[in-house]
Each structure stands twice: as C-alpha cells, then as structure tokens.
Length: 133
Figure 1 (tube, one colour):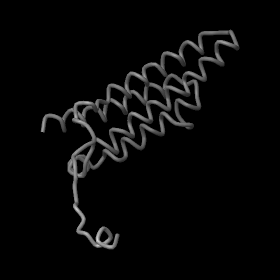
Figure 2 (spheres, one colour; figure 1 turned 90 degrees about the horizontal axis):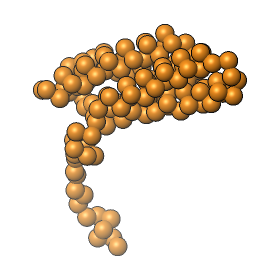
Figure 3 (tube, helix red, strand yellow; figure 1 turned 45 degrees about the vertical axis):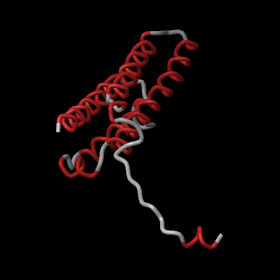
C-alpha cells in the first residue's frame, strides 16, 4: 500500500479528447438559426399555446448554442489560439451571453438572434483560421 503512495507519477497530456475533426462552430450556428426561426414563428402566431411551446423550444435551443460554444472554448481552443486571437475570450463571452437569459433565451427579439449569429460567424472565422495553421 505504501509503495503505491510513494510510487512515481506519470504525467500525460493530450491535445483533445477526440480527434479535432469533431469540433465545428456550425453546430452552434445551426442551433442559433433554429432559435431565430422559432422566434419569428412565435411572433407570427396569435395562438398562446403555440407561442408557449415556441418559447420553450427557443430556450432549449439557446442553451444548446451555449453548450456548443463552451465546448469550442474549453476543448478545442488552446493557449496558442488565445495568444494569436486575444479577442477570442471576449467573443465567446459575448456570444454565450447573447444566447443566455439576457439574450435569445430571454427575449423574442429577432435582432438579438441576428447579433448572436454574427458573433458565431466571428468565432467560426477564427476557428477555421486555426484549422488552416
């Protein structure tokens, strides 16, 4: 038992959990496009039950946008990316806030959905530049 406590440790590291091909900002964009479409459908409807369902779906999809952005931020992007693109932290923060309670999750404003899509496009541009490097 004591031998295991005092045995040398082995340090290991890996670039990512899976091959980097599994990461793609398109996942966040698809969900954000869905959010925008659901907002528009809710605004076009006078049916309170339909609008309630639409709001629930919009909130779920907004949460998925945040999830996909966080996966990119925490699993794909590495310190060299943040050094080369110092605005990346701010972009991800702004995008996740646009998908959060003060953004698409909490509003039926199509303009907020458009702003979210624009932020995701900025993140995607950096993502694809890192893939070329």
